[in-house]
Length: 75
Image (cartoon, rainbow, N blue to C red; front, side, top):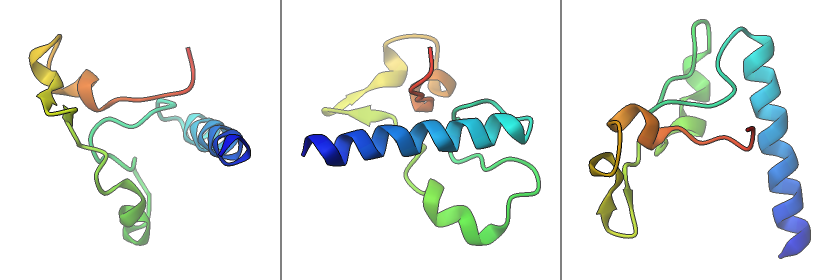
């Protein structure tokens, strides 16, 4: 499991850097793909708008739904 998680971490950092190079945030809000992204890539982002974790609607814990769907390995 450890090697698989290490590979996953590296791949998320790569994806974050590619988004930054394209002039976007390093993370995703909701299901946004960014301008110019082909429709064929949508399947990668399906489910990114999830706001329920462990049965709790996380939008009720803070500043709303935008932050609730954002995730990043970057500080």
